[in-house]
Length: 383
Image 1 (cartoon, rainbow, N blue to C red):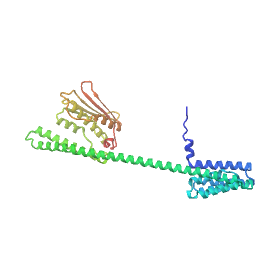
Image 2 (image 1 turned 180 degrees about the vertical axis):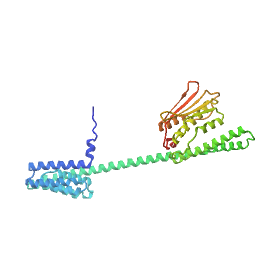
Image 3 (image 1 turned 135 degrees about the vertical axis):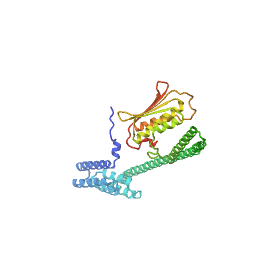
Image 4 (image 1 turned 135 degrees about the horizontal axis):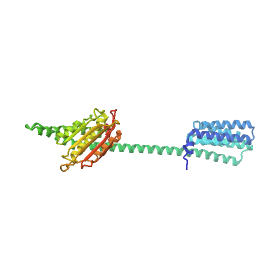
């Protein structure tokens, strides 16, 4: 079985403190070898002090690259340990300003030439040639590393800016589409619903002593007014692009829905044994009853319906809407087909569940279990 290490070696050495510690440790080890092996013809205490001084300067090589390069150049001819010099030149190539590189290159060449002078007693042609090569390589690798890091950072910033611009364009496109939809809904639906309320009010005033007609027209007017208010709330949500504040919809009473359905000519019976419910639970129960009666009226016109609301022993509230077989053809009303899907999602968000299907007697049953929601902020307000 392959075991994944929590931290990779690459990520470990990417930490500047770890990398600096490794450089200092290597310099210390090479200093110990230089003292033991007598790498230059100087007393061992001089070799040790020079190696330690050059090594200590490498701990601040990121913030003081000039000091690290200079200390390495001095330590190399006195200790014979090239590690502080190479580490200092590399740090100078990475962190020092570009205008200082020529001076740093001369410092490195002087350190290498000094080692040859102390070790051999003179400077040969090879010594004069190899110094610039080694110095140039160390500085060049440092400059390459700095350039590569700057390029990577630039590409990363460019990608972040591109991602931010893409997100902004998508948000602007969504806001524009929401505004367009809200405008079309206002131009079409709000106007037509207002006309329905207006004509229903006029019909109610001119019922001429026909109470059933006046009552029906009044019900249509009130329903159209409520629908217009809910439509305005939805339009506000579309235009703002944010969910409305909790409790924007008042807590409804199933009795009101049953009364409205009865006034519309449906036979609906209510059996409510749950008593007083907290606002969050009452709002979800109201949604379930409204969806059930709407579906019964659309798909089973003329069929009697029974609404049952009862408190279970575990504290939840059960809501069932049963309707018998239709006595006429289903109403030709448009629908999105997402009413039950949306209702099931609302119940899932509050911890309840929904079931809908035939009741075994040619009728239909919509059953929901709603939890006891003590707090008032429910997903109903965020729908």
